[in-house]
Length: 213
Image (cartoon, rainbow, N blue to C red; front, side, top):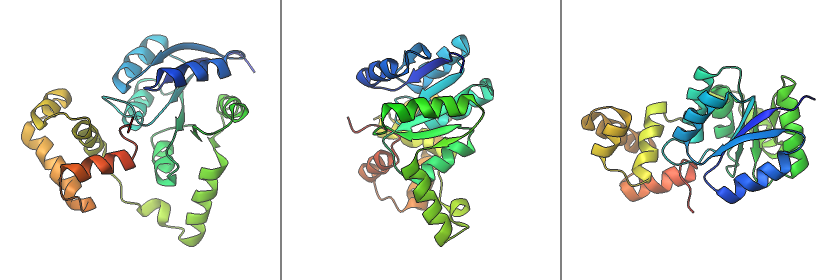
């Protein structure tokens, strides 16, 4: 297997350092970033073979950054490494173009195996997630299609609300009107039965769009 150029995106410096030590050698880490916007900028410059990224990152979570990155660099492979064990987020990650999905409690050899597998053109799903997806599908073959999901814009708005931005600030950040931000906020609350901002934050934490740390 040829040496791959890998970009790491995680908002915890210690995790980035630990991942670098596991990956090098045989592969080369060309950079690390700690938020989704920086990931997009650095990926455009470095054009890595693989991006190893978390879901919960500031400013732009890994799902939204990954979707935009695949549009920008369709040949770059996305390998999600996250604390989130929810199979529905794994499905969402693959729908946006991911090549792999691992949990952060995976062993080092599994990470290297996943990298090699995606570099060979395959897909990799860590066994606990794959098992959960199989169980759900066996109970209800349509379940993977019918899960309630946030839209891309709703997810962006929810993340920024949970990070403490005002609706005016969110509007400026996303370049949309404040009333449009409010529309997305209240659609989320209506669709998911959320009563107030505190529940919105808990919902974002549960979806791992923001970190509890």
